[in-house]
Each structure stands twice: as structure tokens, then as C-alpha cells.
Amino acid sequence: MVSGWIEIKAAGPGESKDLATALLIAAGSPGVQEETVDTSAGKLVSHSLWEDETREDEDTSPVKALKAYLPAGDEAALKTVKADLGRIGWSLETSFLKDTDWSEKWKKGLKPIKVKYRGSSVIVKPTWHKLKRAPGEIMIDIDPGMAFGTGGHATTKMCLKAILRLAKGRRLPKGPSILDVGTGTGVLAIAAIKLGFKKAVGTDIDKVAVKVARKNAGLNRTKLSLTAKDLSGVPGKYDLVAANILAGELTRLSGLLKDKMKPGGFLILSGILETEKASIEAAFTAIGLEKAFSLAEKEWVALAFGKPSR
Ligand SMILES: C[S@@+](CC[C@H](N)C(=O)[O-])C[C@H]1O[C@@H](n2cnc3c(N)ncnc32)[C@H](O)[C@@H]1O
Image (cartoon, rainbow, N blue to C red):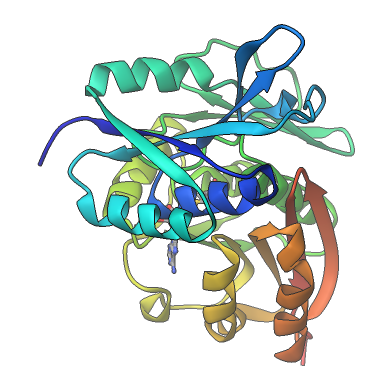
């Protein structure tokens, strides 16, 4: 196995930027950075798509490039992403980065984030950031390693907010259980335990993610049950099921996701682009779930559904 990362610089039409971002993340990039040309100053500016602040100062100049990273040696992922991006008119250049260069570049882009709901807040921060916790705040330390989920991506933030909202909203029983499908760094399952859930199970098809989630569970002194098993092999039914994976996978897994919910339980779906919202809503209401609420941030949407009690 080659140790290091392939840095991908992808360039293409601005209108398909969201899709290109989603394809790069689906290929295994832990995040995507957007580079635009600042026409007033004539220089290149970088925005991390993982950070909170990106929306406010977003400019309207055309996208020049997206930057993403894949583990070196994963030729299959590189080939797939090249073909997928090519189909939507994007071209890419690649270069090799040593592990150390990558982690320094990557670490610089990671910032603590805070999610609030009615006076309660959850902070997710990289382990190397020092922060003081204020009373009533829940703090989660994450070492992302090669897994997705430091809290900064809009899809993760909305999941955290939805979990916080359900946990504080008295709509779940006392000491509820959660199944986190596509756990990545384990951030959602860890947040749930810190919010008073009594049981948290995390699954990920990526064994590396499971290892990273295990490490993060230890760092936060939380007990998670983690597995790389396919969803169909995960036992039990849960008060809350959360899945931050892409829309295609959500649709494919809809029946199984519903099956993992207890009657009266909730399902949070994230990783959905605004343009995919209607079809996901239709797919999950068609199988008998009731829409509870939705959240939106940047081009992403999260949906929450309830399962009728009988
Ligand atoms: C976008 S990340 C989400 C990570 C974290 N839950 C968060 O909210 O930040 C999606 C994760 O889902 C995993 N994944 C994708 N498809 C999956 C599936 N069918 N079953 C389980 N995990 C899956 C990926 O390996 C990846 O770690």
C-alpha cells in the first residue's frame, strides 16, 4: 500500500459544482475545498466546504477548481471519479502528496464548529484545538484520521442539529437508542451518547472509518457499539436512526432503514442535495413514514421522518 494522498484539482462548469462535490466525497475524499477567482484582487481564494463561514462571504465568481484528496494507491476510486466527473464536463489533474504534507494541509482547514438549538449547544472540535467548555455545552473531540465527519460539513451539522432537537424536544423516550448508519468518525453517535442516549450503534461499510470511530469513542469516553457489517446484518430496532450518506444510497436502503426504526421512532436523513429533496421525501412517505421536519444549509437538505406507533 502506498502511503500518501492523491491531491485532485477538478475544474468544470459552476452549475454542476454541487454534483462534482458529492461525487468526490462519494469516491472517498474526506472533504472538498472550493477555489474561486477573486476577480477584484485577481487572486485565488480557498473556502473549505467543511467550515461554517463559507456561506456568508460566498462570492458569485465562477468556480475555478475543487480540491479533494484520495488515499494514494486507490486506483479504482480515482478511475471511477475521473469517469464520473468527465460525464458532467469536469476535468482533473492529480498530484502526489506525502502523508505529512497532506495532514498539515488538511489540519489547517479544520475548525471547531458549534450547533445550537434553544439554548443547548454541541461543539465539535479537532483534538488539537484547545477550547474551554461553557456550562451547558457539550464538547466532542474528533481526530478525523482518514474518515469523514469533523462536524464542519453542512450535512453533519444538520444531523447534529436534528439529534439535538429530538433529544431536547421530548419526542423520544427517556434514555433512547440510536443507530448511526455511515458513522464515519463516529461524531453523531458520540454526540447522541453525550446528549443522554443510552445506546449507540454505528455502522460503516469502510473498515477504516470503524477504526477511526472506535478511537474517537475512546477519546470522548463514550461507549459505542461499532461494526462494518452491512445494514441488513445489524440487529435490533432503534428509537432514532440517522443516516448521512448520499441520496442514491438512502433510496436503495429505504426499506431497511424503516425496518430498523421502532414504532413511534424517528429517522434523520442527510447527504441530500436540494434538487433531490422531493424524490427522497416521496420515496420515504411512500413506504409509510411521516415527515417530521426538514433543515437546509447551503445546497444541502436534511429530512426527519417519524414511524407511526401502530
Ligand atoms: C458523509 S459520511 C458521514 C459521516 C458522519 N456520519 C457524519 O455525519 O459526518 C458517510 C459515511 O457513510 C459511509 N457509507 C456510505 N454508504 C454506506 C452504507 N450503505 N452503509 C454504511 N455506511 C455507508 C461512508 O463510508 C462514510 O464513512
